[in-house]
Image 1 (cartoon, rainbow, N blue to C red):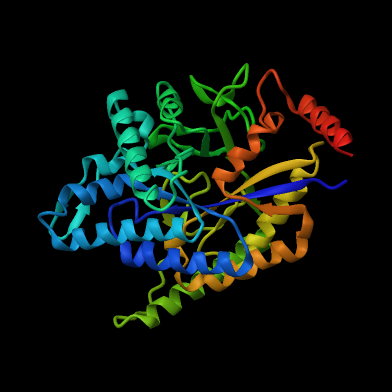
Image 2 (cartoon, helix red, strand yellow):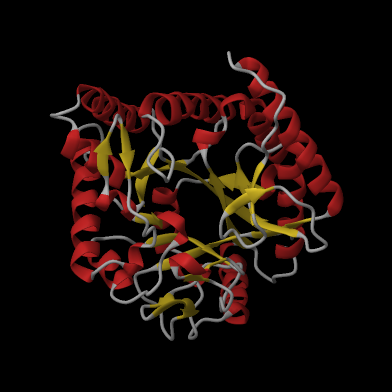
Length: 386
């Protein structure tokens, strides 16, 4: 029997990490479009709300009326997500702790990895953010809980005491870990990731290690994708044409096309260049052509089919702030998944997935429950059900 896959589509709902952008353009309008697509196609998804930015708006809004408007729109949008039945969970970019508002724009700090902040800063930011989300969403959904977390800049190192703080505030699911990712200037290094593809209980001292025994935390790794030359060329052409269209759509259109592109390991942005090494990234929706997203997902499924498991979760990252004119490609890709994979896939939000895991603890790996044992448990459960 072919494996079934639970698709955990989650949107990093945020403005830019350097503090630029506004709620209306980068959050409210893209969220509306994404919710419409999800409702049209019957999809479940989770919005990972970046609350550190919202707390910064609160600090400065009394002195700057524009920020007060943005703060209200942020709150209204999150409540609307809940009213429309979408899950909302926690995303944090800690550089907002050092934010200043100067000359009509935010200037944020340089440290983007929450693990590099003092334990008291970590605890205060996480606890305040959880309280804020709960207070906001419970006005719509009395049963709401914050159970999932994604760190800005994928920063979860050093892992102690961060993982313990997350667990103590009711967080269970952690996203953002990916095989091979390394950002040295932010102390992010996942090149020694012990479990690269399947959910696992993390060692509280080191998120890259699998715990000896089950605990209350579950890491869901992002699925690695290495684009081949054909996919890379198509992507380069797509990005170039998109930039040209954007230039002509603006009043100060020019012929210069500046194609920004993440480097092979994601350390920084630079000009696009071809390399003999494959471009390594992970499953995501963004300013990408359908062909690239299709190639990535098909490659991941081909790899996961080698695991002797009948049910595997797959996290797909989304940055709705980058979609804008690319929503058509997103709709086409999701439609492809539904049509091509049919009964093999099921879209689920993170809140529902955590409830799902309560009855299926064998889906999460620890040293005490390895992949072979998990497979045997699943087969036994399936035979009993039949």
